[in-house]
Length: 151
Image (tube, rainbow, N blue to C red; front, side, top):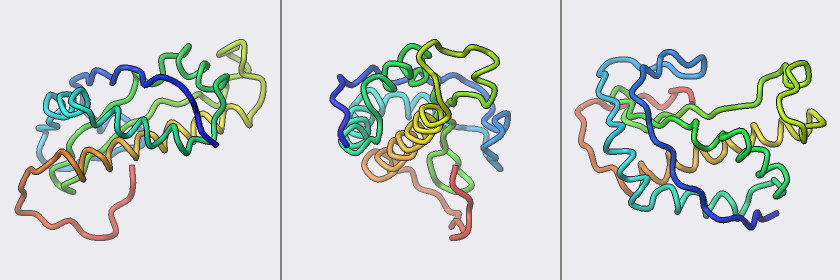
């Protein structure tokens, strides 16, 4: 499936500790290089990753519209994990209590919620891959083990 939408602006990265996220743990250096990553996103990493993602996204325009209404793409966070020498990320998601909270009028099923949450996670990983493979050339002395968990 393909998603035919315009590429939105890249997210602005806020200065916060990624260890505050439930899904991330960063050990060591606290220089998360957000300014550099944000510049790379503006220079084309976001557009390239978004283009790759939209070509294979299993999401329709209505679900993408929900993501935009909720400003989910603006809530991404990307940060450098110097210990593991990788780009980490935090992807926003629709909470489990979406129904009780009347989270969005067009959300009517768990299928929609899980589809959006899965696809936004896929986009986050693609952005990290593009940044690491094509933009980042920072050197480090530490060699990361192969069994580190994915973000």
